[in-house]
Length: 82
View (tube, helix red, strand yellow):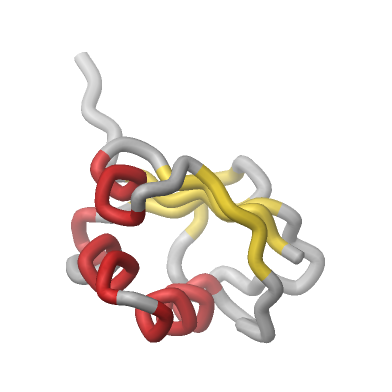
């Protein structure tokens, strides 16, 4: 089981702040594809990956990051700062 966390507009599109999923995905991208196949709301949230960042066990990662042993994946828009 992996905990998924959604922030900002990702959370708004999916309608949940978090959920726990069982997955056979080997990478973050595989997980995204599984989620997109579930419902239109996931399709909308993951439509443009250029506007999305991911953290795996609270470390910034890319979409090719492996999920073996991972407990948490977070999806959020790019951070802006000043």
